[in-house]
Amino acid sequence: MIRGLLTRREQGVLIFLALALVAAGSFLWWEQRRPGEVTVIHDEEDLDSPATSEDAAEPPAVQSEPESAGQIDEVVISVAGAVKDPGVYRLPVGSVVEDAVDAAGGYAEDADPAGINRAAKLIDGTTLTVPAKRSVHVERGSEPVLRAPSPVSNIPAYLPGFVPRGTRQQPSLGTAGASPSGQININTASSEELQTLPGIGPKLAGAIIEYRNKRPFMAVEDIQNVARIGPKTFEKLKDLMTVSE
Image 1 (cartoon, helix red, strand yellow):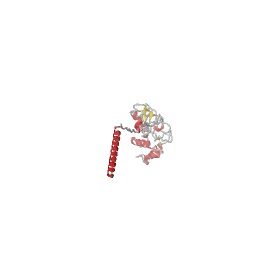
Image 2 (image 1 turned 45 degrees about the horizontal axis):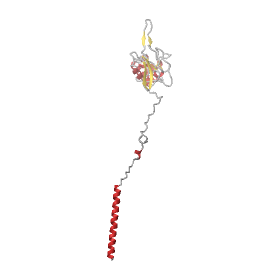
Image 3 (image 1 turned 30 degrees about the vertical axis):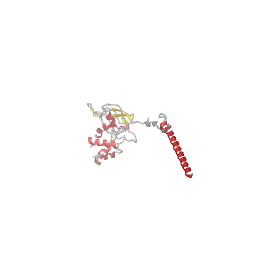
């Protein structure tokens, strides 16, 4: 009898297991038949509109600072006198007298470059007058007269030997390098006037002018700093020269 009960239990267990398997299979089959939910993951940046996205917006263009309205990069100067093409010219700031002469076509044939400071910086709104060489005019029964075809009307900075601490009186016609006492002003005299001094020829006159363009003479004794002018030559010249007017 016990053997018969065990058989029934075994049968009951088997039936239970069979039903459980059928139920599990049915559940799995049902789950597979149901339409699956599709989960879409959106990027947060994609959800924003490109027109309103701060990241998509172009960075503002960097604007360069405007140049100062008061900045001046050129000077306007009138070039007159013994040049080939007188007129008004615009030149870069820092240009010198020689640059202005070049802009005006260069020196005319009768120009006297020694009458101006060719290394002086140009000043905006001024006039540069290149002097002409002085000529000797002789009339019958009279002594030779030294004449200047055109007056020198430059501002002091454009004159040879200019000293920034003060200004000099403008030279008169025919006596640009002569003082009221008749002495030759070695700071303003032309090459021809310097050659009227004893022992001064064209080469020494040119050396004197070249020296004073770099360093004006502060005293007549300073002329001994020019090459080939020693104490003996100075003794002959000292009473005939001056550095003031």
